Length: 361
Image (cartoon, rainbow, N blue to C red; front, side, top):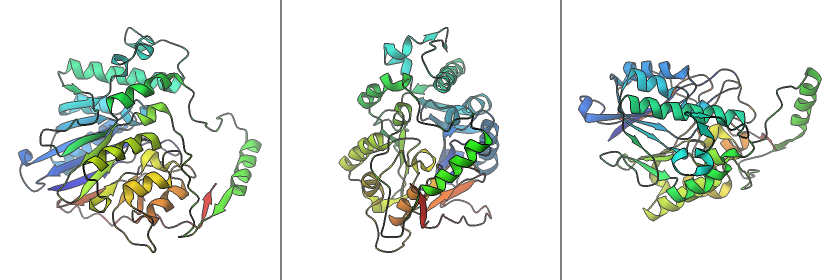
């Protein structure tokens, strides 16, 4: 089975997100010989770009599966445009308000009205609720993507989260966000912060890794849909913004089905390369152990904004992927294409990130 995966650029400057298009099957056959899926849709303005990309390069206006991995505006904002302008077979999205009163009670007339919910989450839940209403209005079937959900031929399958794990995370939806740099920093404060950042840089080499297993991300990120695309002997893993607990549970599921990291050609770097989402232990399980010397065994993509450094991606994360045979390619304002058995586009070859000898602490 052939496949092609497109990571589309999302956002401007330091704001980014995910918008992934994929096509799999007999890519040189008729429309009935392949399937098209979209995993997340970036911001609202990204939706039109997804539609045009699929029409141009996949030659169709029909999408078999649209997946909203979790309620973040940088992932679901453009999906409404996809539902409006394309023929959609199914929408896979979680409906948190159907699983716990803690979430259901913050809604009134289809909108989040509870002021205790932080602003960014309130906007994202509003957008998710609106997406559900739009799908029902257009009679698009909705499936909640918990472990075991697959497309009709079993090629695209959900390996996380389980229903139980998902519901255990919902009480955290009203929690505090991850620490962020204050938007109110003045010029002097920014200069001081930059100087402090330089001081906190540390050295790495091929044999010395500073990434730890201590990273923590939000409850919403850990509810992210983790997907496996089976393509004969070359499988692909999509991780969205999942953190260590979510990835570990998905790895447990994969292990029960005979997971073999040597048979994966592609693994998405979680959460745009944030060091809060991965550590050596989970990377050893998903990618394999560190290699004695550089050797490309698979590819990894990260959707990052043009000015995402130093957090997206974190250099200690891309170094960790590289040490395990998975060099990282980043969008940074450009499209990235991973494929097997797809018609040639005449695109230039993507250059992965190098091993950095200096990383942020």
